Image (cartoon, rainbow, N blue to C red; front, side):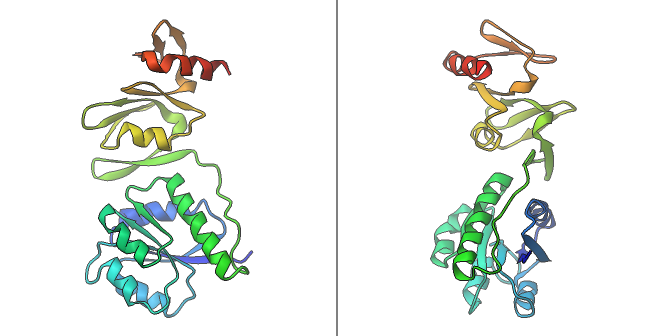
Length: 236
């Protein structure tokens, strides 16, 4: 199997680690090097054939945008950044995708598939169909670090005013992600919003009585606008 070669260009070791772990799910892509700045990346691009580059914007010495402008012939580029304001500049430079951190694995895979399609159109020989393994976890940011959480370990999620609490089988994790973020990134076959303030793992439900459902150690209210959909879901 001919693998596509990629590099990660990001000055944050934690961000590099997340992308590296995501790439472990893709057998057809080989990570050649993790670069902490544009100068390191420049050297790799001139010594190796690189098909795909994951590029951060905010870096020391030279920004990712300026670095991309300086390249006479760039590989396919996926921008990964904490700053959504540069999206237009990125697309003007013909990037494949623009991912805003923290990047979920599902969103990452969509970007990679777009990159593979573009590379296949240019050179069909090395490009292979991306076949991701089944995703059973996600990363969330909490206490200045990214925490890996397996979907099966989540009992329920509670939305507060300015943050979200994730209740797992072992502990409670606080994150600044929104409820909408979890609705979009948790597998819909296993998780469902039952109230404006709660998302539950359907496998964790012990019983339903009236407008409440019982988990292992807690009872949660079922919103009137969610009950009909919930009952159809669990009875299908």
